Image (cartoon, rainbow, N blue to C red; front, side, top):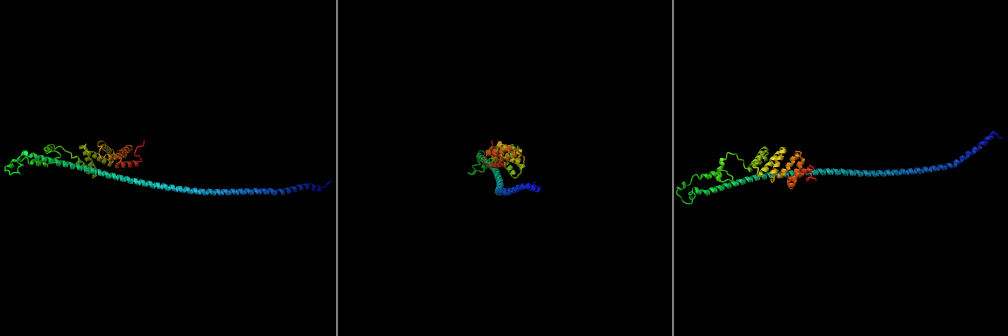
Amino acid sequence: MISQPIQRKLFHKPIRLAFAAFLLTSVFTLPSSAFAVNKDMVQLQTQVQQLQDAVARLQQSNDERMGVLKDLVQQSSDAVNKMAAGMDALQRQMQTQQDAQNGKIDQVSGQIQSLNDSLDELKARMASLEKLMQSIQSQQQSMSANMQGQPQGGGAALPAPSAPAPDTALPEAPPSTAPAPIVRKGKPSAGTPMAAEPEPAGTSAAPAAPPADELYKTALGDYMSAKYALSSAEFGDVVKFYPDNPLAGNSYYYIAEIEYRGGRYAAAIKAYDSVLQQYPDSNKVPVAHLHKGMALIALKQNDAGIHELRSLIQRFPNSPESMQARSKLSGMGVPVTPKH
């Protein structure tokens, strides 16, 4: 029999051989697998590094593009701000020009109105002078007729200067005929013959209104002096006593102006309507249209006021009042012609 030590040696020997074979196999196989793993890791690291480099380049490119985009946005914002500032400046300039133009239009309109008032006063004076000339001409005709009729009453009075008549020729002239022409000549008659002059003596008790031109001239002078209450009453007398006279239309206009300046717009509109309806040929019709429209707008009756201003523009397109009406409508944001 084999002893136990020998058995142990024999038993351990295969184990040792197997272990040695395993070790040899491990020695020969381990470096190749480790090398393969290291190679994959290197490739992976290389790829990761390349990817990181690509990401870095992409990030840099995006940063550059974002910078350019920010610059473009900033430039656009600056351009928009400059444009807005320019638009504001242009709007202010246009508003200033419009205000200046409106002021000039108002000034020109006021000057034209003043010229119209002066023209009315000159017309009144011309009418007064014309009546005075007619009165003088009437008196001259009456005196001429009286001188022609004098020989029939005393025939010896005319030949006296041409022939040496006796002293008895002087008493033959009727003494009553000589003072009569003097008395008639001294009376202020306007357009009536001398034979009709004694008739007003019987009717002198009835109050007579002053001539229309004199009454209108007085009223206009008080209006120019800002005596509005007095001038309104005097213009009312012109309308009352001379309703068919063209000066009555002007009187209605100035009555309306006094009411308008006093803020009594309803009464002013009524007086303007009297000018427009009763005196359509008056030179106050355009300005009556304009101020009536202004009064309606002041009363918050915008539709009626706009219609009145458009009517003015349509009837008198080239008048200064039409320019004022256009400016007023433009300031209100209303088109001159209605939209259909």
